[in-house]
Length: 354
Image (tube, rainbow, N blue to C red; front, side, top):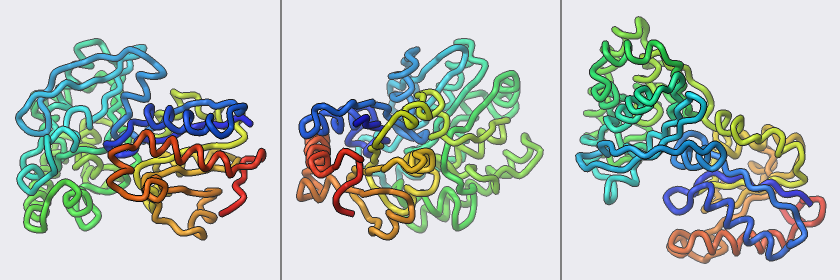
């Protein structure tokens, strides 16, 4: 049986590349004669550059300002005059140095992402693809704009380049479904802090409108990565699905066509996973091939799985017996889960249980 292994990252526990390797190692224990094809994926968030570098090469390293004041080392890819930048490399939650708080929610900046865009332009990139997701900031991209010299300068510098906003988040910048209200609490913001962030974004939206000659705040994806999407859209960016960008460069369509079974996964498999995430993209292109999900945690019930076209979903936490062990020993626990699932799979790829 030919098995396509195409996971996303598992939060901060495993990159998509590491997860694919762990699943393959476990699967091979129970089914050593299967042909395993590893194709790690990303939706634009953490792991975006890691996945692309694995396939394209062209990895660059740049020192930039992190989400707070400390400098960090960020990686990005330059391939055939196209630069691929991952905002989490410069302003990711994992770079805070500890749990997010109300203070970090207020102070975190996207300045380092602007420095990466600057580095890409200096290196000769004519097309800049910015993967959004996993950010610690809710500054609407103000930091990015400041790093590029302000709105007028940033607009002028990017005028000659194609700018792609790689994100599967459809949230607007403002309001109850906006960047502050929806994602602020995940970044440490309490209700009072959310209100402050919302006010800042409202004022910033007016400035963005002046350079874009339109109100970008209500456009799908404007709220991605703490509003970085809004700034990039205002600077001439065009939104594309992050999962689609990765799929195109990893030859996913050909891999799917040749597969008998598809295995994917992520840190938490819930209702949001079925709307624009890697798993939903894979199911949509599987064309009837069975799709198994191996996730850190699974919150969807069997009827929801069936409706989504997922053959079965399995939890690392259930396999490990605790969230703590699932996180602390993620690679080994994922391998063990993959081995257990492989032992229960028939040659058709259909599990004997749902």
